[in-house]
Image (tube, rainbow, N blue to C red; front, side):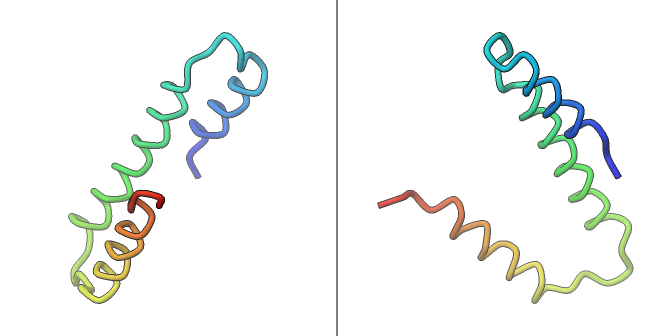
Length: 66
């Protein structure tokens, strides 16, 4: 399990007023990128149904709030 997000959250909790949100964002994007690389390049069979469900969930999440 990755510890960089928990470390970034701990640092953010301690000095939240003097720290920009960039380190936490960088840690999160780094982990998501690693998950995407593992899912795409280290699998024998890519299940398109699950990929479609994930993309649909992402589209709902990124939809602008009305």
